[in-house]
Length: 229
Ligand code: CTP
Ligand code: MG
Image (cartoon, rainbow, N blue to C red):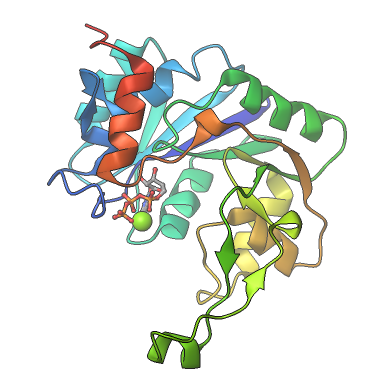
């Protein structure tokens, strides 16, 4: 295959607060990483899983249980460091997708939409969803003064970014090589945009939500149903 799918799973999961790295925390009877990998089993791509140091063997066991073959590499301090580590392991790929393990319920169809857009010629692709919340922009002054809220932002002009984000491998490598460490964000497409290159959007999905808080884990648990084994 000419496509690599990097699954970043090296975060600590501070906000979930389970005391283990988030991808290794159990939801509905299996680690979040196992759910994520099960959802990717049908995708025609070489899987690279990026995990915290010391959990490489655990990740291999989880992948076997999910029924997928993966390369396991150790991540870094920030998400961008982890993506860079995954990118180093995805040498021969023409296209690279970067996906959060924490978006464990992402429908395969969403991954396929990203791949299809790359094959149709886009060099960077992001799944997006309309924003449903009413959002206010705060300023330093409004943060300092609890009675002073910033202005409401017209949400019609806003989109929430999801993953997998897909890239022409050469473009993503260049974006990472030239990225200012300070820009190193949670959004890889931002680095591509910083090069002045266009980023295409495809439709995201509510099911691709990121498990971040305990409430998100509860939501995942209820969607997954009873323990899978
Ligand atoms: N990630 C990673 N390496 C890091 C930080 C994050 O691979 N150094 C991954 C996480 O494992 C996750 C995805 O990036 O799949 C999105 O990050 P986030 O939801 O913030 O996960 P955590 O950083 O683990 O959570 P928290 O910020 O609450 O600690
Ligand atoms: Mg984080």
